[in-house]
Length: 121
Image (cartoon, rainbow, N blue to C red; front, side, top):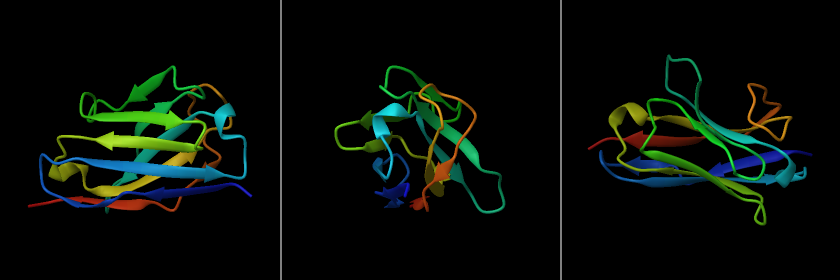
């Protein structure tokens, strides 16, 4: 049974940092690309960042380039999202998602339950 469990969300002041983690189980983590999405109230879900199966390739939304970094530790079956210089508009529920492919694609077959990130003073 595939499980994706996010953690690390919380309340942070503008300009602060958070690191999200997504612990994966139930599949061979090192074989698949992974992604982070976010969704704010009343808005569509947005792709934030993706990483290929070995971590050699990454993609980012323009809104987070230079501030967020996606990484993975295949030995720990975990994907991370380091978020720096956070802005109020980064406030969202953040989800990790598994791709059915090793390369970064637009397909996702499993999702986590999400973790809330709130950026406010």
